[in-house]
Structure formats: C-alpha cells, structure tokens
Length: 105
Image (tube, rainbow, N blue to C red; front, side, top):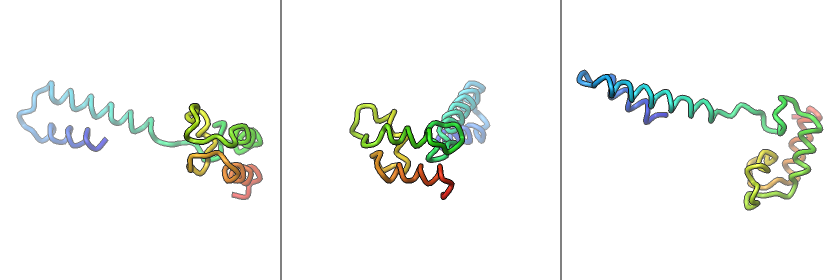
C-alpha cells in the first residue's frame, strides 16, 4: 500500500506527468487499496465457523481438527482452529474456544 501511495504522490507533484502516468498511478493505488481492504481481519478469534457467535459448533470444529499442525497438507483448512496461532490445534485452542462459549473471556 505504501509503495502505491509513494508512487501516486510522486506523480501528483510532477508537473510534467502525463495523463497516462496519472491514470496508472490511480489504478495502482486503487488495486493496493483493494488488496489492503481484503487483508483486514474481521473475524473474532474463536468464532471458527464465522457466524459471529461463540457456540458449541465452533468448539466441535476445533475438536475435529485437534492434533492438526502446520505440516499437514490441508493446513490452510485446519488453521482456522488454531486460535492462538502457534501452528498446532491443541488443548490450548480447545480451552480458548470453550471459555468463549461459556462467556468467560
């Protein structure tokens, strides 16, 4: 994002910039903005199924993925249950979700 901002700023202060350069800077800035927006994390850790609630369903998913770790071939699927981000779905993750389900966190 910062690179696109810097590039657009350089074009903006360049009195001799062509319309094509301005258009390209705008396009690059818009693309960087969309990339940034899509990378913003909006989910709540522990809301594994994404329903904006902490339920037994979340706990069931973590339990189903229990023991999976970052070396597993389907880690992209399993890592949603890695609540603390340590690369393994373990008792710590189960306990964290259970506490949220019980409303103690």
